[in-house]
Length: 307
Image 1: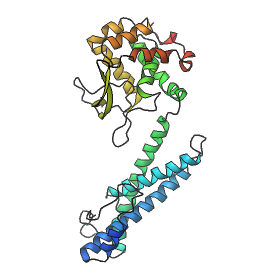
Image 2 (image 1 turned 180 degrees about the vertical axis):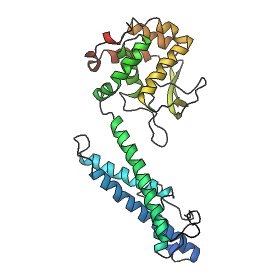
Image 3 (image 1 turned 120 degrees about the vertical axis):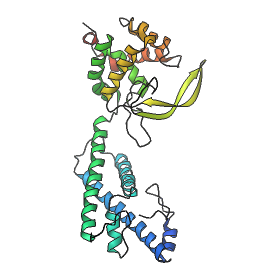
Image 4 (image 1 turned 90 degrees about the vertical axis):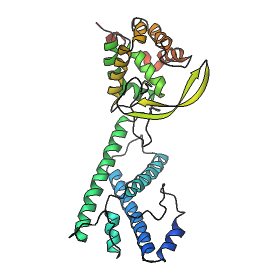
């Protein structure tokens, strides 16, 4: 589809209406552009209706039943609909253009195909796009962390497994990952909103060839905090983050002294800071403070040690 008309980047942008009206009254090329833009807007509305129908099939939950939550969910669906339509490969807008007397865009035009063929392609593409969106939504809900108790419930089994490999108290790993992510509420995401699953703030250096996420971080130099851009490792799951953390410590000689102090939670944590794991001069102190909180007091560390 043509991009000669400025298309909105957010669903609430109505600034292009006057320009659209002007295009509709212009020559044939401008009218075609206006027709394509109108068709894209209809496509966006249709997608929003389908997303709403999908939402209506999900049972109500106390976590998402508030009016404010529903309002922001509706805004989110509006933006998803716009983003899906702006990709320009769903096909529905091209079908609408043809039905209104325009011509299909060159990238969609295939010799010997009629309107029914374009309609079938559009239906298939929309179904695929909505299925992709539905999968991402279900995954996001499954990983959503609302409180420290949610964080502990999701991470505790994985922390236990990683702790056994290192010989440390699993609560130490929970406390460190809680500090790095704000109890799971501030896990790093990329520009597309995809979760990096990075629980330990490990940067993408030293030959890392996996996925990455880039964002601003605060580093301390001689006790002075400063913002800087940095690349961090990204994983497909929290389990991968725990596993990579284990390998990261084991494979870096500078952390060997810390691993020799696993019988003492505080000794291990201070050993990490001394080895340069973090630049924050209060890093170890903060983790020790989290270890002493009520949220972790009921967890049994005995089963987390190596036999």
